[in-house]
Image (cartoon, rainbow, N blue to C red):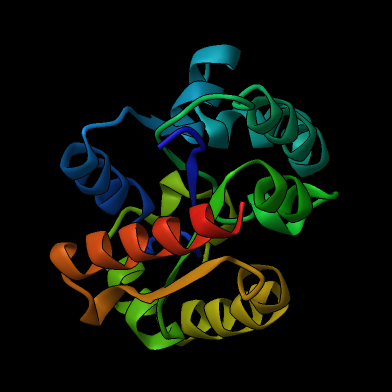
Length: 177
């Protein structure tokens, strides 16, 4: 695998968890863009959001994304990464984009069980407000996420099935090149 696989999807969709599993199974590196950003700025993403705002964060996120050019492996992006600037075009041109798809309700269940304070976009949302926010954001982001090369129903797909999907895609894609 000489081109990276970029994982995209809403926050809480399992990009980090599945990215690590996929990388291990394929014996390639796993790279988490959020961790790279935190290392680069020396503070948490919520702290950076508070100090500099979302626009500055999105510019930083794009710069870190473009620093991944030429790297092989599984790269987990932030939930909003493909939705800003020309990021989705860049991802599609520089690797295979895999969308970990979830329903709003499944994301709501997963995010309700996590610490929403670690996620700047969710701060202050609970219960039905959180579900409504997720539904709205998913609808806004669908045109970006849906452009991915591969779409996977993350809830109903096993690691073995995911590996087969990725391998089949790459075999088909390599034949076209």
